[in-house]
Image (cartoon, rainbow over all chains, first blue to last red; front, side, top):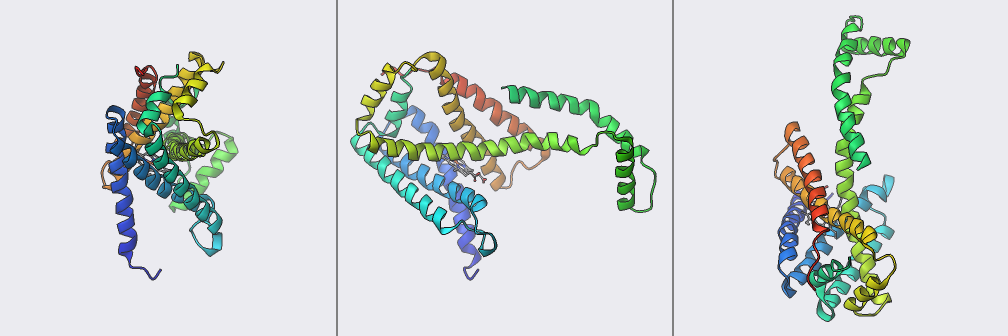
Length: 110
Length: 174
Ligand code: HEM
């Protein structure tokens, strides 16, 4: 309540521009394989997905009378999962075939 | 697909039912205020036991609810899918190419299973991406006319299905 409104509009805009960035990044990744794209994908997908999941758990696991945000359990769990997935994706980009390479290899199964 | 067909037929039915709903309204006795008019209308409907017009709006909303729900579902699937695969790479600590080689030897690795699985996976990504364009346009205040909302919805769903079926046929060389 005490925070200025710009905090929310700023975050709202960040979410939209990030989605716009993903919109450019994902189709590019289908045609260009590059380590930079792998890392950009890991960061953008996880941040966008994390904010998206926040919207979802705020809807379904909110604290009722105590507030519209999700309960601490779900909030902490989602932060944990996002951090873990991001770290693992970076590790995978560094030590294995990377995100683009993984999709490509997956598609060779027939 | 069956769901789509059902939705499509409902749309078609709609066209035939709508005129009669106008007749129903016209048949309601005149009353002094809108709320009284509405009351009389509903009472008459109840008396005659005839099906009531709100079903129509339910059918219409159904399609939009489906589109919106699918956006949430596809986003959720991608996020949890990524997290699950990330966890799996730690639990089964073989290299990713070794995983793929192993999966290729599984008895279920046959086109009848793999092809539909690929269509499903590709649809998840393409639908979320295309419907995401609609969301971004709305966020910039564009495309709110009902006509545009309807048309862009059909385009997103249709194009996602077409692209998914097509993408599943592509097999990379290595
Ligand atoms: C391919 C490019 C993508 C675009 C253009 C895109 C676009 C969007 C947009 C605009 C929203 C907000 C919808 C709203 O305002 O209600 C959204 C929600 C969401 N997205 Fe994405 N997205 C993309 C990729 C992804 C990926 C890769 C993931 C998974 C990691 C993901 C997960 C989510 C989730 C979980 C939500 C929340 C759904 C909800 O609140 O109903 N998205 N996406």
